[in-house]
Length: 451
Image (cartoon, rainbow, N blue to C red; front, side, top):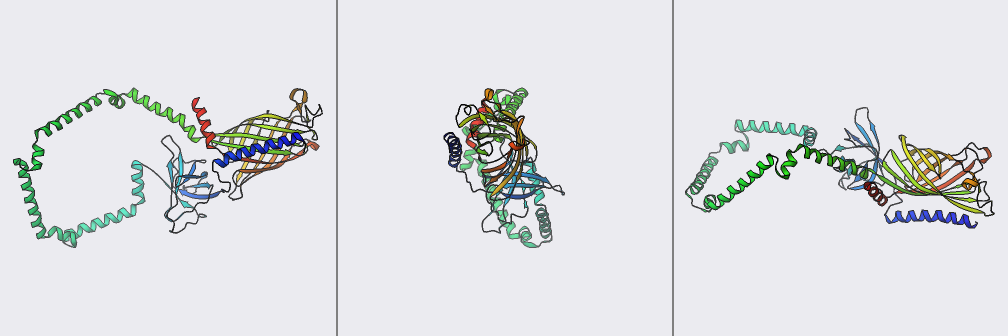
């Protein structure tokens, strides 16, 4: 292998090792796999695809799909990154993510030692409500128990009325009546002591200083409440000043508007390298994918083109007698969802205008979690004098390839490039590494907030 090709390969390996090292210090587990859980809900209260799935407070998956059932219930498919065990007293709830908005699917596994749950069968979920709705949910859930309680109370009252049972005997017991009468006499004596001013309690009640302190405190509290009611003071303005109340409400809405995208944003870092057989070219990429929402992402990165004089691509130093040359090109793309598992992207591909369509198919497999098919294209480089590269084809460069996600973070590629170019069409294959990076997400969020 010649010098500049070695440099290109080493550069690619260095990028992959750098990303892998960053990934390893984040304590990511390469052996994670995907398992799907199916949960049936009566309603999902705003839960959506892409929301987090937490198990005892740990994020271990995402909401993959929501399906409306014929009986109007909703089936939620949760894609888990790790194996989850559930026991008979498990709980699955839709909860609020924070006061700023958002929802999560929260799972409590239950008590080990109880009956183990078969995860191949649909599970049952509930919504964690608050206030009056929660009371209504409790009453509805315990309808049969409440009916039994009311029936038991009815029977108890009948026993009392007819003189049956222990409670009835307590009510009609003469000895009990005599004891109550004696207690009443004792209470009467205590009240007499209070009235005549004898005893410790009486002194506390009749102490003038204590009375004056209580009266003064009551008067101060009255003045404060009157001031608040008249709209005076900070608290009074906050409660009764409509303009101030609206400003506070608007400020809360503005804070929510600013921070909600930060909570929702996800960032993935990656590196890849593909080899093109006929052109004898390596294209190595490093990039960030920034998802402000599950249906859209921005890709920002670069491509390193390592060209070989034995290939059919001409380049500047090739005409000068050099055997290899590398070029750094920009990748900047915007991707939109065209529907479930289909993304359309457009922008700069290797510094040329282009785009592509990616169609994904998630799999429930430990080894392979996803397969995808991609068609992408860009303008061709066709001038050594102007662009320092000539791919010796007219029009655009079109590629079609398949990919498979191995474990969770590696992807392998295989396909064809220069589609429709007859004898110039070539095979291609490659490897990529991609992972979710919360540290870069924090940096991106801070940059966004500063704007």
